[in-house]
Length: 435
Ligand code: ADP
Ligand code: ZN
View 1: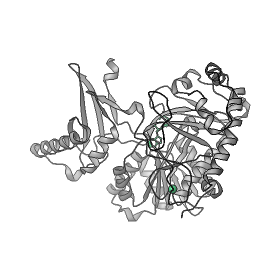
View 2: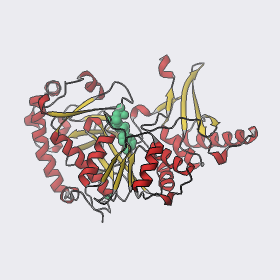
View 3: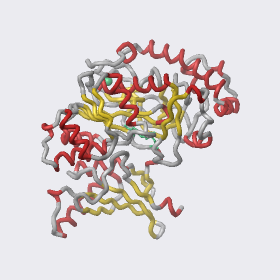
View 4: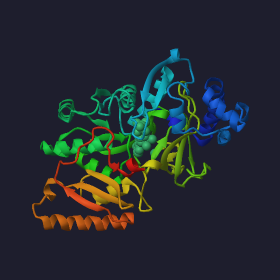
């Protein structure tokens, strides 16, 4: 049995959780209808009134919100309170287009930080820990969210932000960091840098890492755990719902518990909008049940995953989501075949390569092309062209088996692919430039 930050909520019975959700949704829909004209119009168009929402099940009657709505309503169109009641903004990374700006009241910040605190405690954090936060600070939610959570747990917090890896390592060693929070790609880079400096995994005091903000595979988890000598936990969130901490992994490491007292999750068919049962893959939709300033109802995340309510050995009762496979718009369609960057990463790590790669999609003579630059580890590097060619062929074969189509592999020298300190850019799709 694990430790909990808020045991009465995190291990509440299903009946209790539903009771909380029923109570909060009625209030929240009323709040949104009265204060957010943009959403009121959507409800009116659909012919739904706040009185129609009596329980959480009635949520199905409400209209969806999409990223396009958020862009339309930029910057103040979805604000649910007076601006004078807001104390902060944060903004998306703009990975897939124009940035979204989210607003927070002090209560919203507290709620968000509590969610992050639950994640830190689930990873074994206590007030005796030294928590090194190397997510970016600023508009990006990663740094501020985990920083706030770390304070709430009472850890000694190192607000490092991302980058300056030499300094990260120096502080980690000198101050004996026990928990590290960053993107998985940056964690892999820190592991690589520690090794280069001659440190063994047992030389640091780290015990856990809390990694999120981008998709990562189980293979990547294994690699990071070995290189840093830690247990690596996933954390998920998005600016639109507050930031990291919407869901987090417990010691079972089989999916992330969604903080259901604050965020109601649904899985829908992305084509039809129909709600799918637990266990089926679809697009994750979130309703924030008690946020004041930016209270999104039925927001379509475009993240694809599965929900499960099987009991968890940690004792938490909240629904679990699988690792998102990637966003629906991360999926590449190459010569008619669906390819996720995460599948390519799985093959690379299984074949003994490091997670340093760049996927390049293009079009030649009206046919899609798929090239993958893959970095060699120093010990894999060879001057013999025939050795390299044989390795490339072997990797192409393994990729074909996994993906159903064969990419062209280019093995490149160690250190030749740029490392990421935040969210990694893994794909360059030049087809979009021509469309
Ligand atoms: P942007 O959409 O510009 O990247 P955010 O910084 O708010 O803005 O990122 C939120 C998105 O990041 C999520 O919708 C999801 O696609 C991705 N993400 C966050 N955490 C994870 C995670 N643990 N695993 C996979 N993807 C994640
Ligand atoms: Zn659990």
